[in-house]
Length: 66
Image 1: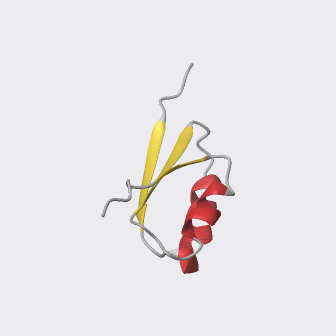
Image 2: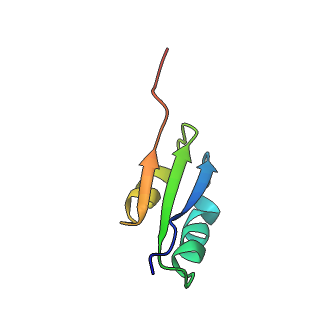
C-alpha cells in the first residue's frame, strides 16, 4: 500500500540557531514518505547553506527585487 506524501513547510528567516534541530526532528520521524520544503525569507545568515546540506530539503527563496 502506498502511503500519502506529507509535505512539511518551514518558513524561516535568519533561523540558523535552531534550524538544524528543526530539520533533524523531521528527518527522524518514522513516517517514510515526507518532503521538506524550506521557504526562506531573505536570510542573511547560514540558513541557506544549512537547508542545502540536507538532500531531503527542497530550498525555495524569494526573487530578489529592488
